[in-house]
Length: 397
Length: 199
Image 1: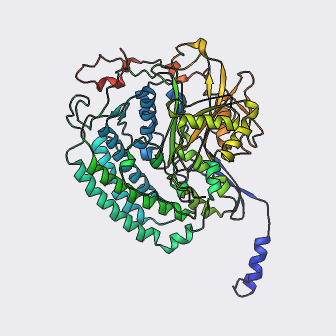
Image 2 (image 1 turned 180 degrees about the vertical axis):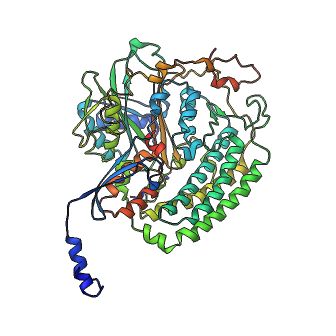
């Protein structure tokens, strides 16, 4: 009222008073159907004005009980289940699981199959990061970048589809190797058609396009002052919190931890290639965004190198028709687009696993939300949440 | 806080032996490259804290459990049930962010008293994992600040990941169903047979 008395001028003293007006905290419900929650995540926030004093994510709306379902399925059937965990990067989900089974059975995967796995994993990473690169600005109110990145993401999905027959759920990995490409023939005796004709040329052309869109995103988003104002210094995750909550993947590297499972776990022949682990130091939303854009560039480089080096040979090792896995326990993890994806497989012998524990990246990545949102403004919460790049299927499993 | 990635991983069996000595383990193994350290329930929190502070395993990856049962309501029954010692194993995975080192820490709980101290004082991130293990296996994490259901709705009865918990869809529609019964694949086309099962 006094602001009006002063002829519409807001006095500094008035602003100070309004901040000190402490009322009762309000509970604000966000979701489960909310555009910024990437599916069905519900957040219950206790707010004091626009500031969050406490946040409680409510998850489980997408819980499909995959760990239980895996206990009544044979090993080859489980790959269909698990590529639906994180549906943005279906192919990458399959790899650590089949590698776990292969290691328990002592199967050596032919080199060509490993290369095909590697190329498709990196294409999946590119597609995942392009979805992030386009949808994150949308959450901040910038609709244009969506069109640019989705255009190229569709080209990448076309490549994956041309090999596997599926855009989202390839179900392309087999214990011992990979399937022949859509329409191909036997894999063990002689390879009739393992990759579609012209796949490498089409991939190289698409990679050029992907690099172009990365530059466009640099101009449209990374260099954009409004985006920078919304993201720099927002949602900062210090390294000790990253470790305590098990935050992994690009989120971890944006906080200055130089760790990439592609350099440490030898599921796929990453050692054959030159690539950099992208690390940034501030741990804010902006760094998490830029880390992923840089990772797209690194993945493009890996794909190009792999195409130049891919050996010829069989696609699948000799594997019994009915898989019986000897008793044992193993934990295999891989660097998925969203972070550490791992499977703890317990076999008692037989066709069905005794227990499969699925370690998904998004679950741990968003478990840090209550911590990071303390004292944030609600619009900053939207910015922070989006920057973690989670998918509810990967949270709930 | 920026460890170098060039640090090489420790050989699994050497790592297992070293960790076992450090945390006072009651057993250890390193089969298939998976380091597994068996810890007594009473020393659970201390062992995890020691692994974090003195072995450099500062990254909390996950926590879950395994229900070891002689009789199962789902899946194939164990081939040799008599060898199974009935218990719940609480499994916690910690790893390093300087090398590929990592280990599973396991504590066994008796079936009639599934209780263990919470790891939340050591790793904040354990809170959600323990809530999941609590509702799925019925394990009580003593000292957990907020041990309510994570995925399941309030009032849900039973613990779905226990081996005694039947999977309703399998009860209603036994497996293999009629669509799964296919002719044996020919020797020429081996791949076609891998999804299908023994007829």
